[in-house]
Image (cartoon, rainbow, N blue to C red; front, side, top):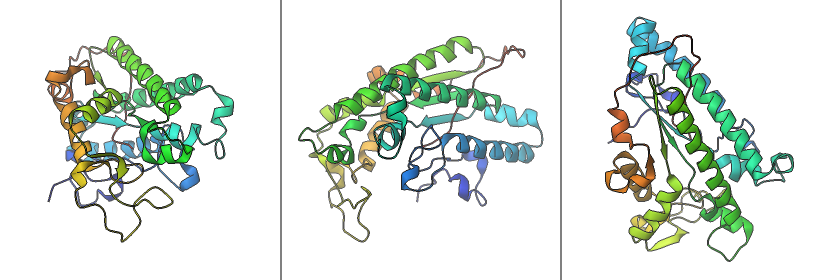
Length: 293
């Protein structure tokens, strides 16, 4: 059995020095995102949970200096934002955001909030950030079904994700230029990678779920899923299969031959990147997020 990074809620028997997962299904950058389907842990609350872990690490290692030395070597993987569109902006029956902002304005609000969270993470000791862009959210089976379209994708949602990705990549440049001496950010172009993987890997059923989705879009309990799951892109109406996720992970980790998907380097090079410690202690630096959905 693989040793997965433990979720924050279940770290009591785990070695937190090997990593912690703060992800929460349905969560977003904005606090209200996904609330119509029940409780989730927003990015801000995930950051608060990380503060608690940093405090535990400090106690475990014996001093703030040792904790800082440890945290500077850690990889912070941030993957969030899809739900802010799919389960917030494009659901006007539950949320007012689409009447308050244009898509471009809403994207700017999200990026500004994300920037503040990155800065808070930096203050907590984070130095190596892998920030994933949004994928082809308009091609998600549940989204396509909700629009009742005969098309295979909803372009307005894909366009929103494209705007978000452009702004996120610009934010990565901003932080790398502003804090190049003491931290490193990379951008993972999930949307471009999704197009590449769809063309290159011959999934037999790119537009069908492996299981029968229920009203929430997740698998109906106790129903048998497909037997040939490696032929599918989607597990249910919203989540991709293990094969798809593995292809994404491997490419993002080592994209030497396909460098268009990681900027300005892949995760492998980020992990081994030597942080220069000529810190300007009078400068208020940036922050970051950890694993989130």
